[in-house]
Length: 181
Image (cartoon, rainbow, N blue to C red):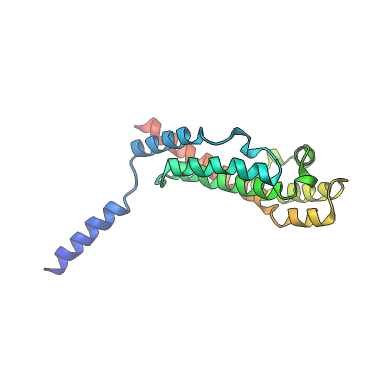
């Protein structure tokens, strides 16, 4: 067998494996992901205790299994963002006695207002995160150990923001391609 023929076969095999999905395939994948997401417990993002979170997390695993392997940037961006959110909520559930009963939600809201986090880029979220950490330390339900534990994963707030921006861009690109077709 000639080198050219062998190279051609290898090229054809790998080009099929690494080929980008079509826009129609991505549209179908996105629809499948949305349909599979209906399995997920609506309370998965609520700040609950660890036991409740773990029970709800099972529905996420079922949804991901239903969706299957993802090929498209738009759906991958949703899953990445969702995974970071779930990791954050799961870790928050482990200090629920500190952050539960709307404590975290209220502190987050106060800090968003005082730092104007919603109007800023993710790169300036460190002030927002610091504000949350400092205000959690002032809560009677939180110990210093709880606050230190929160600090070990508070970086996820910035990561979620960045992933949200990535998803907005991926979705915008997807919609542009939708418009072009």
